[in-house]
Length: 556
Ligand SMILES: Cc1cc2nc3c(=O)[nH]c(=O)nc-3n(C[C@H](O)[C@H](O)[C@H](O)COP(=O)(O)OP(=O)(O)OC[C@H]3O[C@@H](n4cnc5c(N)ncnc54)[C@H](O)[C@@H]3O)c2cc1C
Image 1: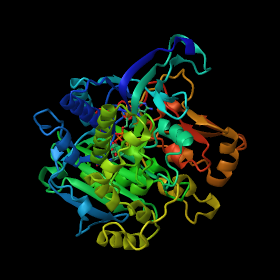
Image 2 (image 1 turned 90 degrees about the vertical axis):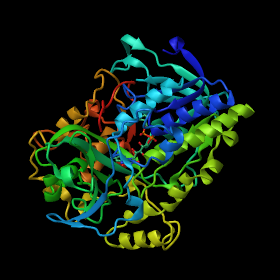
Image 3 (image 1 turned 45 degrees about the vertical axis):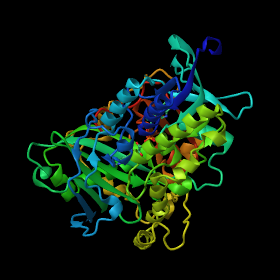
């Protein structure tokens, strides 16, 4: 296959078409123009279109957008609605209590509610208008290194048309080697190329482990008259039920235009109970009397899931290597207490663009010239990240003690009681089923689906418009299938069948109840990567399937 591989050369290559890369590419083109530097810039995105893999709440703090495109309104930025007011509730299993004090980092009044998918698609068109070569449908599969084996020189895209048997078929198209003086990695949470670089160049050495949450989200079409018709608050957050106080996370409901709402549940992946099923928890959230009243008469029009990088400041990796930079969620650029990563990712991309333009002026692309550490230190981005540096560590604590820590951090600008708090990798937090006092299984027994407002997992996958070409090598590598059905089954009852929100992993047991087999349905995969993060044995590796495959989000 290698001898037919085409090579294309650019000055700068952005990998991933999310807010981080797109803001970076736009800022870079503008800076290059002002300084009279001629740059050939490319951006690849694994989704079929820019925006088709973009999923978020999404309340947008416009601070970075205003810096990037000051006339964003005139330029057609797609905004759903303004945040009129914030509401914050504690939920018990049947009741809801308004929290009188909304912490300042959750004050969203004056921000915008957007569809990330539409927003990102618009940023893509702005980037193209400025001359960026935007290539959706191309997945970066492998990092290319120079002769020293340490300098990043580009990315190889995934082959297309290889069969399940690993044999190229009639429609085979070899991946392309896209070479660049500078490659910017903006793959979002748990970037697969970032993982590969990390193994080789140790960019996370000395850092706390990155930790994650998974959000399942829907856009629901409501009837003409609904809660938001006469409510001041159109940005609602909840905590408590269904997760309780030992599993962190919470719900959100945001008003969109045309009588739609964006509704989701976020679950911290540091949870302990192996029987916890992310999707069932999401349905329990929707069935809460307070929530179900808000969405009564509605119809789910799109669903999806995605992870959120939530470890914050202490988990930010080295920001550059020779020939490469890391931006956005891949590099932990999210403000955890505010649950916002769009503006922080955009800003990191913009700071990276400033470092890149300086590197071109100097003609040097080493780690030292490319690193944007010092720019980060001087920007509002550092202040935001630093303020939330201990937040996830605190909310991951069990029971009420978390509120004590959060309160202390609130009063001390994020320092809290002990200063730097440790955090544990999500793959290490499950406890063996035999040690769980009351596994959550029973809670899911009576859940019913009507196929309209309450849809089951497979209908959810259908509503995410996810598609993968069936005859291709499985992009989810389970290294040892026996480990799954023996040790993992006996200890945790195969938690992958519950933490995957898309039914990718199924346990099949024969009639006699003895023979067990893990069946994979990779075509359902939403690219959320929860499996690679939460698997207690590190037995699953998520790799990019063929470019153009995966979810087909348009409004989430
Ligand atoms: C449920 C949920 C709710 C959220 N709510 C909010 C909110 O209200 N406000 C807020 O500010 N933030 C919110 N966030 C966080 C926010 O969405 C992210 O922080 C932000 O999108 C990160 O931007 P990014 O560009 O780093 O990555 P992403 O948005 O993840 O984009 C990365 C892109 O890279 C592509 N890609 C990945 N790997 C490759 C590859 N190898 N080759 C080619 N392409 C690749 C992906 O397909 C994707 O399109 C939320 C997130 C979730 C999941």
